Image 1: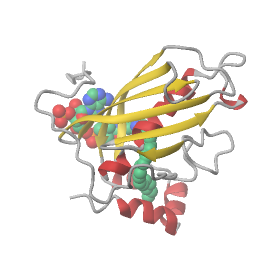
Image 2: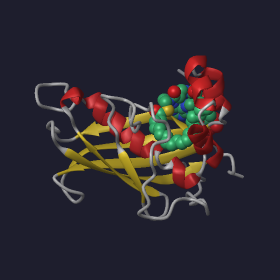
Image 3: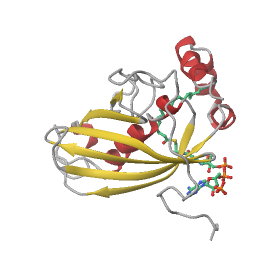
Image 4: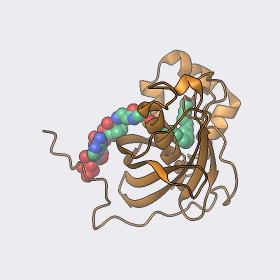
Length: 194
Ligand SMILES: CCCCC/C=C\C/C=C\C/C=C\C/C=C/CCCC(=O)SCCNC(=O)CCNC(=O)[C@H](O)C(C)(C)COP(=O)(O)OP(=O)(O)OC[C@H]1O[C@@H](n2cnc3c(N)ncnc32)[C@H](O)[C@@H]1OP(=O)(O)O
């Protein structure tokens, strides 16, 4: 036993999330944070290429179309891929908080099967912040943004410094990222956090 609480609802002394003054405006596309990201990168042939948009407050919306490479059972999305879509959407909330954080815990409910070809309509919001801990929740709907919920998740992200990636990532990719002005620009955008 680690002694950690596994609760994904914010503790009583959590504070409401604060939208960073330089956060992208509601309706603005957020773009990819890394072109090789399996969730949102454009350079991953079988990746999800999830496209997220800033919402009101500390919220985002996103869409992801299930392709044949994402199957688990014949004609159906793999659960792990759907969890990735939720994780990536929740991760995109960082653009609004302007903090860098990694997923510590992700609890996913699979409510309805999601066929290949489906466009999944995701939304996510931060529910509370407690020190380095960011609590958030997400849903994925099918048949339209107001369609039935097919998947949902609650998550705990933990704020980290940029060194988390530099110290732990494979040097090959880290060095390539640090040599890429577009990537450095993305990382810098997060350094302004107080
Ligand atoms: C140069 C290139 C840079 C590239 C990046 C640039 C910019 C990024 C920009 C934008 C990002 C935009 C979108 C991002 C989209 C991505 C979405 C995907 C996100 C992921 O997919 S990311 C991958 C999966 N993720 C991991 O790879 C994490 C592996 N893991 C660790 O690296 C450590 O485990 C860590 C750091 C999590 C914690 O380690 P640590 O030593 O820093 O902190 P510590 O353990 O002390 O925890 C502090 C407090 O959190 C509590 N706590 C921690 N873990 C918990 C758990 N699991 N359950 C319940 N509570 C937990 C403790 O109980 C304590 O709580 P308390 O303070 O109350 O005691």
